[in-house]
Length: 82
Image (cartoon, rainbow, N blue to C red):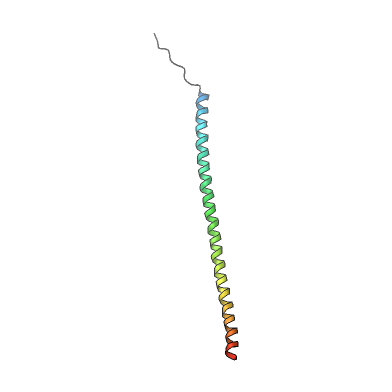
């Protein structure tokens, strides 16, 4: 007598299970990618702000130095002239 074979799962059930696992993995991968993209974007923005701040600081120092020199010259002449 031939052995009776057990029925295998239907292909649709196999695909459904595989899809679920793939979606879950895809969600995890996409959320990780979003996190890295956001972090990279934040770093880029902070770098721009820092560079702009450095430029502003240099301009402010230069302007302040010119003003101080002008004030020194003005008050120096008045004090020496008396």
